[in-house]
Length: 124
Length: 250
Image (cartoon, chains in turn purple, brown):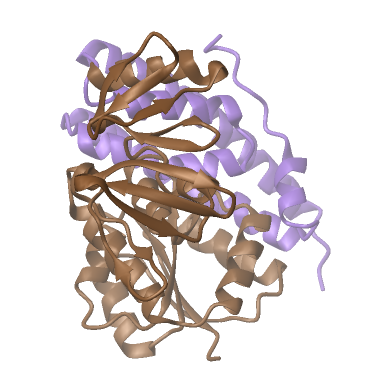
């Protein structure tokens, strides 16, 4: 089940932007920037064994993931957040690896949408 | 009214989404600035003197509640923002304050803003905020206090002092320790919501009981309280109530 990464449905975010593509692209770019940065920080925190930081990062990421309509990923993050301080190191590494794969896939999809929207933008 | 606000949140996405949502609902509020942590929030509040603060509860340098304790005065309204649904929400809900869950739902924001517009800063608002701060830093829920408005005065019993609440129409009677009864002109439903997750249970359409004061369950669908009162349990709530009580005992 973990291998089935849910696809990104851009209509969810577009609806939340009330059809305003300039806001949509802003949200997409911010998602790309923040999630990329947080993945790097997550990796660093994991290497240093700082579980509090991992928990905080996962917590901060969740609302944005939810806003983008990634329901399964949001649930996965929520489960990880609630057990990150107590699970053993092997389990933690496995879970972090899994979430990194999922988020990287989301980033790739978002990036494709950014390129597409940029190429079809109407210049004023 | 001076409709101005500040956003205090460490997450750029939350700030962006709030800004965008405020513009979507055409909120008649001017955003004076943003702060990405508690220290910056204090500086900005003192500099701008806004009428409303959107305040993140969990920030790395200090919590939203801690930030409020560091201010010399609170003469603004606060809408808390959080993605937690646990103890912080309890402290907020318990004190009848406004909060929004992340990501922000536009309809909930609209409701919170119209509440803000209808409300003026009163002694009671400020008192509620102060109480929330105190409750948040008070680890033992039983020591928390609830503010009850009587006809001629306000009393603040600790939760541990409440044995049960009896609802009758638009009124509720609080049975406190030493068999003191206090009549409040609010419905039982109101207190059910206020006291959710605080050790109280609506066991009957007319009663809310405090678990610390339950001394026994009888065989005839009722509980005996510490003041020897016998409180009925409705048939459909019996099993759920047992589970709730057992979870507490464990």
